[in-house]
Image 1 (cartoon, rainbow, N blue to C red):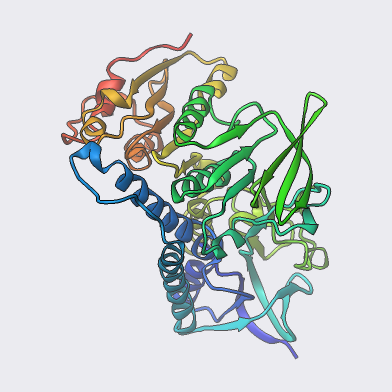
Image 2 (cartoon, rainbow, N blue to C red):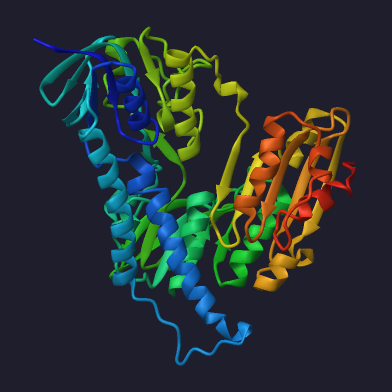
Length: 459
């Protein structure tokens, strides 16, 4: 006999817990299913632990540069990875515990530990427990994509999750993939003291970004000693005398690269292959992502998909926004849609990249008349004062509507400063709203009005 609920939430990533709390607040009886650690990817193997590691790596790098600031540190800077890991584990663990405490203490909700599977459009089994509800919300996340490279499964490769178990600095870390995860870990472990080689089959890192952004990020990492092997396909991995090696092909030529560790960072896949979606009539695309409409409803009535598993965004903030969209439509009578949001994200290298909207390449392909404003970070007082002048700002504007189309801020504080432009874009206000604003000195944001006062045609 199945136990009845008003709603079942499967997964406790960034969307599930907040939605469960809203549903309970609306008077519903809610079941929450979680098979592993509470908090999902962000809390356990994503944003929280990696940004804690980034902070430790930043501290190490700043210590090495202390003399530039007139500060003397006796002796060489060393990194104690056991202490770094302990700090990271504590921060991540506390975050996970807070989510679990929240869910278990939620009046009107009941937590079920175990792997959940759909057994129809209104029924879910969780390790033998049978649950039923008129509404089911899937927030099951994703995991690292493991490519079919010969020999890879026979060597101890790392993913974004298992690399967090390291308590020693790798001698030579080979990273497969030069996108966001690969670049962040590459710079991080180089700063910890590892030799790092990043291998990418495209002609440049973060290939979806504009060439000037991609080039600048590559140069920043190369200055710190990170090596890039581009336009190269990894075709084999193997053990080699107690170490590891990968074979890469470029233009028909094979080259072997030796290393101590391999980190696979070539993409993600959704956790949908053992969810029983077919029994409930829930459609997926060819990559396994759950197909959803503009309000995140699946092909099966009464079932929604939120977070990374729906393929509509692979970020913590898009997952939380999924919750907001579902709650607004279901509980608040407020029509909100996925298509209304503006793509926005960050790359948390040092310096970070804050990005939203259209790239310059996308604007050019659109054929619209546009304006562009740029400024190198070395011309921004805050960056000069902090001794962190790498990067630049680029803002794209529609010449006819005067609305901001997109922006890239690669530089100190770029991941924060970007939001003043993003909010203007959401308001659909003209860029002159920013040019007429008085910003605080000395900040990175204070130069945004000046940059927008010096727009030129995008030719």
